[in-house]
Image 1 (cartoon, rainbow, N blue to C red):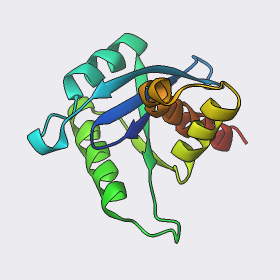
Image 2: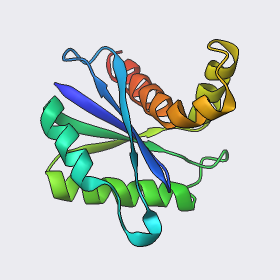
Image 3: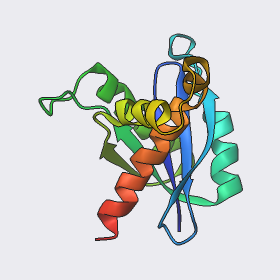
Length: 140
């Protein structure tokens, strides 16, 4: 079963998919969105869901550090609800606190990536980390 991980932001959605066994996550792309114009990139998301034969979505849930739900987490849950309705797929949420920070540190320290290049891949790497954390959790 293929699972898709999403890192939902206000301007982009990072996309990752699992391998067929559900062991590893690979980055796919970053979908540009515009929340203000209600363009959430669902057409492109549907194309990717069909291409990879996705059976479940895992969406990063950016909780506050005190474990409460803030505006960004509410936006992610709203995105997940809409995606579930549009694509008739189950949606689960994965705590993503500090995922983007971890991804940025990885790109700086391990890949020595410039700021401009980091901006282009950070959301995709965050989606990979969200999905991989989920896959690791459910495989135990």
